[in-house]
Amino acid sequence: MAQPSPQNLQNHARYVPLYHFVLFPIVLALLGWSGKRMASHFSTDALFGFLLVVAVTLAAFHARSFALTAQDRVIRLEMRLRMQTLAPQLMTRFDELTPGQFTALRFASDGELQGLAQQVLDGQLTKSSDIKKQIRNWKADDLRV
Image (cartoon, rainbow, N blue to C red; front, side):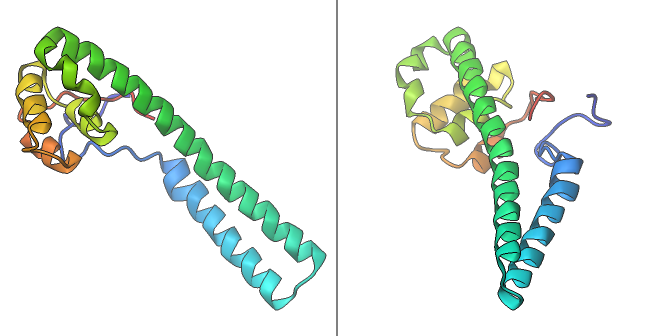
């Protein structure tokens, strides 16, 4: 899906409106309502209603979590391939990068990747937010979960 403006540090976060702004608030409201109902009018039906809402909440959370974990694995593979091509001398230290670090580095252009990766491996940049702030030529990632 094309974005109206080029992706950058300020607009790169991905929100899925139906998940983040519809499903998640509904699930939270149901969780609160069923918990209150169970506490004020305890019955077997109220207990099972509460457990059902807890199960739906866990399913919604894990559906997103599993997708993000699979995405992180693909990003790791992509970054391994990019690093092998663009900075082969750093490959011996690739496993020192944390998931947050290689996920942030994926936004770096090919020209910036080696220098930024070296700074990360040297301990000069540790947080993903700091890495992203150093990127001058943003490499958009529009195919995210």
